Every structure is written in C-alpha cells, then in structure tokens.
Length: 90
Image (cartoon, rainbow, N blue to C red; front, side):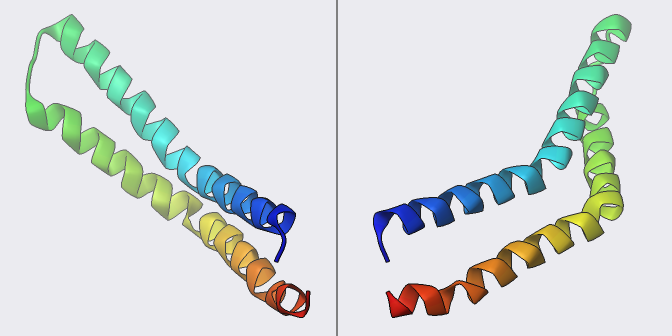
C-alpha cells in the first residue's frame, strides 16, 4: 500500500465520520443554544432543563436519521473491504 491510497482511505474515513455525526451534533447544539437563551430570558437555572431536551433531540435524530446513517456506514465498510484485495496485490 502506498501513501496515496492510505491518505485516501483516511480521508474517506474522516469524511464518513463527519457526515454521520454532523446531524446529531448540529441539532443538539441548536437545542442547547435555544434552551440557554430561554434560561437567560426567564432566569431559570435548572440543570435538568439543559440536559433533557438535548438528550431527547439526540434520540429523535437517531430514530429519524438512523437508517440513513447505517446505510452510509455499510456503504463505507463495503467499499473498504472490497478494496483489500487490490491493496494486497500491490
């Protein structure tokens, strides 16, 4: 295996990880900001008020986007495993 193919595999791995984690991270961050703004406006400083909505959002995103994430991960794994014979031959 040469350095170009290793770099390409690493790039694919990082982009796949980024695309899989981006929906959960963005939506939980958005909910966290909205809850923080709500807390500042109402002056309610309850710790569970920040944790529970983010947890519910993350679970909802996993339920909604889970099949897409699984297909994307399976596609990456199949591509990676099918490329092994070409790496061994060179």
